[in-house]
Amino acid sequence: MKALLRAFIVVIIIIGGVLIIVAGKKPFPEPECLVCGPNLVRILGIAEVIIGLGALVIQGNLIQKQRTL
Picture 1 (tube, rainbow, N blue to C red):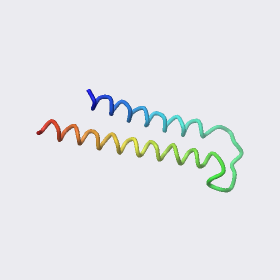
Picture 2: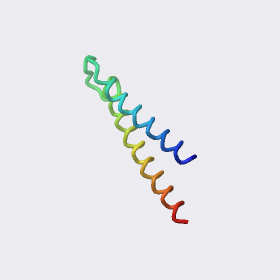
Picture 3: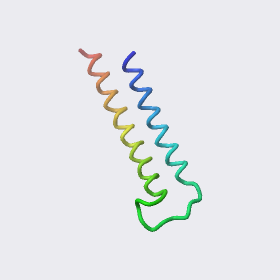
Picture 4: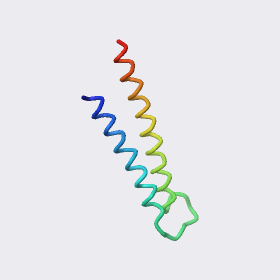
């Protein structure tokens, strides 16, 4: 049950990252710097998705190791 809950939380994190990426594409004037506009929001959303996918893979590996023991 704990494994299912952890996987569900990771999926929610991935969905949140995708929503950040989509919301960051609103028609804002593009500033030139990286850290003062929607570029930062987009980068953070992408990072959240990548970290969430990594956590999902690690969770799957841990579940598989527990089943073989």
